[in-house]
Structures are given as C-alpha cells and as structure tokens.
Amino acid sequence: MTSQKTAVVILAAGQGTRMKSSLPKVLHPIGNRAMVLHVLDIVGNVAPDLTVVVLGDGMDPVRDVVAPAQVAVQSPPLGTAHAVLAARDALEGFDGDVIVAFADTPLITQETLQHLLDRRRADDDPAVVVLGFRPDDPAQYGRLVVGKKGRLKAIVEYNDASPEERTINLCNSGLMAIDGKHCLKLLDAIGNENAKQEYYLTDIVEIARAQGLTCAVIEASPEEVMGVNTRNDLAVAEGIFQARRRRAVMAAGATMIDPDTVYLSADTQIGRDVTVGPNVVFGSGVTVEDGVTIEAFCHLEGAHIASGAKIGPYARLRPGADIREDAKIGNFVEVKKSVVGKGSKASHLTYIGDAQVGEEVNIGAGTITVNYDGFNKHVTQIGDGAFIGSNTSLVAPIKIGDGGFVAAGSTVTADVEEDAMVVERSQRRDIAKGAARFRAKNARKAGKD
Ligand code: UD1
Ligand code: CA
Image 1 (cartoon, rainbow, N blue to C red):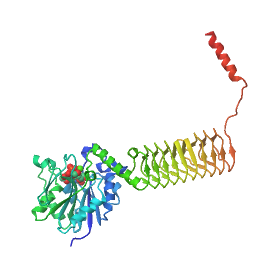
Image 2: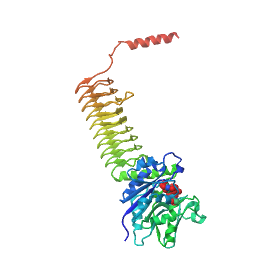
Image 3: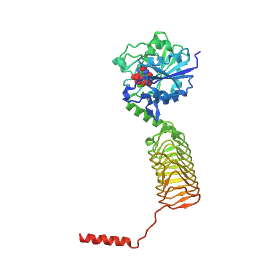
C-alpha cells in the first residue's frame, strides 16, 4: 500500500553556537571527515530517491563540501521544523517516506535507518516514526512520552518539560521517518509558542495525533545517536568512531598490537595481514595493501603502501608518497610526493621529496633530495639498482642513472651516468703525527698557566 520511495532531508542550518567556532558546526571533522559527510554517506546506503541538505545563510563552505548533493537554504534558522520546510520545493508532491536526519548526529548506522524505514512501512502504518534512545545522562535532550500501548504521544523539549517529564529517560535522537503523504501538511501546522520561540520538528507528533494519525518509536543505542553540540561532544563522538573503525579494520584481517593508540581516518583503507604497531596515525587518504608492516610511531597521510612493504618505526609519509612492493622506509625517514620503487630501501634518517626512486635502490642514512631552491621544487630521479651512499645530498633537478653509485658524503649537483661511480668530496690531507704534536703543544700551554 505504501510507496517504497525514500527522501532524506539532512538538517545542517543550525548555528552551532555551543561549538564556539567560526567554522560551521557540521564541517567539524570526525576521523578527518566533516560530520555532514558522514551523514550523507550513511543515508546514501539506503538508496534515497531524493536527498536535500538544508543549510543556513552564509554557509557556502558547506555547500562546496556537500556538492553535488542538492541544497536548500533556511534563512534565518527558526527551528528544526522550519528547516525541513526549507526543502518544501523538493518535497512537494512526494508521497514516499521522508527521513529527517541531523548533520550533527554523525554516528548513525545504515541498519538503524533501515529499521526506521521498515517500521514506517509496517502494517499499522504510523504517520511518524521517531528514533529514540536511553542515554546514561538524558541531559537536555527532548523526552519521548509513550502511551500505555507503546504508541508515541508527544516529544517534549527539555526547556518546555515539567519536572515529571524530565524524569523520562527515553530521549529524542532527532531522527524520524514521516509519511510523505502527510509531511508538509503536518509541518505547516507547527507553531512557535515555546520557550525558544522556534518551530520545533518535535511538535509533529502531537499534531499528527490531533489529526487522528498514529506515531511510533523505535530505539537505537545511545552511541549511535549522540548529538554533537560542543567540543567535548565532538571528542566523545571521535572516540566512538575510532573504536568502530578499529574493530572494522581488525575484522577485515589486520592485526593492531595496541588498537587504542592508533588513529584512523574515515577513508583509511587497510588490507589483510597488515600489522599496525602502537601509536600510528593515519591521516586522510592512506591506502595500505595486504601484508604490509607498519611499526610504532609512524605518521602517514595521503600515502599508498603496496604489499609487503615495511614502514617505520618513526617514519613519516606525506601526501603523494607511493611506496611500492616490498620497499622499506625506516626510522626518521620522510617521504613526500615520491615513488619509492619495488624492493628499494631507505632505512634511516632521510628526506625523499619530489623523487622518482626506481627498483632495488639502496639509499643510505642521511640522504637528502635537495628539492627546493626557495622558489621552485625540483625532481630527483634515481634509476633501478642505484646505490646512494650515506650523508649524500642530491641537488635537484638531477638524475642518477640505473646502477649508478654515489659515494658516501657526496653533494651531487649534476647527473650521474648509468653504472658510473661518483665521488664528490674535497681533497683529503694527511698530516703525519699531527695529532700528537697538537696535543703536546696544548699540554705545554696548560702547564704554564
Ligand atoms: C534537537 C531536538 C531534540 C533532540 C536533539 C537530539 C528539536 C526541536 N529538538 O535538539 O528533541 O533531543 O536534537 O540531538 O528538534 N537545525 C537547522 N535549522 C534550525 C535549527 C536546527 O537546520 O533552525 C539543525 C542543526 O544544524 C542540527 C539539527 O538541526 O543539525 C539539530 O539542531 P540543534 O539546535 O542542535 O537541536 P537540539 O537543541 O540538539
Ligand atoms: Ca543537536
């Protein structure tokens, strides 16, 4: 009987004043991804026919982040019901189910959204289904008033609740599914006679009941529906997100030696039989193929690590680091915008930037690709099988041919031919017994004092 079409309206127009930030609240990141994008991703999984993100005035940065999603502007923000009505044009004539989600409730799961829809479509056909939860501390959340038959009778905002209503521990997550046939009519009936003089979406329940419609409630875990209103909430949400992601990474076949100390980003991809040591940070854009070992205290961002590679301890991979199969990047090695070819090794104390390093190359301790002259960045190319001795500066642009050998301590400013050996050091001077004479002279001086 009910249509199976789904629309999602994501509310993101609120000022988020409690964050005390010049950044719109919904752009604050969790796992290095804006909160609003978490919500967009998750709702995408229930295959909506229509998705609208409601933004406030002057939220152009948010518009850019959510593109190409459809955007409606609520100006000024006069409450959550008023916000849904900002999407009126999109909802006019839509008779499927309308899910309202909050951009500041980013930990919601696909399963729960599906559960909400399934309940909306159940045989008793409730006009509104609200997602409730029972937090340890109900704080300022709206309270759900449920009748004897388990039907939802009202949602009371904290500021408007009586002391008795405040003792209810079943709270409003803000998420709901509304029968599209009634949606706009119900929203239009909502007024603003309340403590905050806002148009509360929560009033939809009493209004639906007054029109002879029924409302239902389902419950989710408090973790999933916690709202982010303050910086502290943001940190709590991050913690929940990290714990989830770590479990997912381990479930997919990676070992984490001390998972609680590893930071993951929303887009981190980690393969099977990868071992991650303690205190590793995965910034955004990191992909790790199967069989990689990442030892303790590495910092990785925008990097791709191919199978069998060994990273760390204490390595730093910056954006554009492309570490190929079985390569080794050791302690205090920094790699930026460079390919390190298959089987190549930079085991200690090295900077590799804007470089193309071939296969089976050995890069000694203290090697530096001198890539920057204060104006431009220059490329270093190192051919297959080359050997770069320790404490070497390769002043780019420069090319070391296949099999080339740069002796330790060299500062190389011109290309090195294939299989050639280059030694760039100043002439050595040996002074026979010079040290002994130096010591004797100083000892005599000391005796006179
Ligand atoms: C809301 C609910 C409350 C619930 C809580 C759960 C209402 C009236 N109250 O309160 O019952 O327990 O969420 O977290 O719905 N927004 C707009 N335009 C506006 C106002 C808000 O788009 O004019 C958006 C915000 O950006 C945010 C969401 O709606 O994403 C919730 O707004 P917020 O002000 O945080 O509501 P709460 O006070 O938390
Ligand atoms: Ca909120």
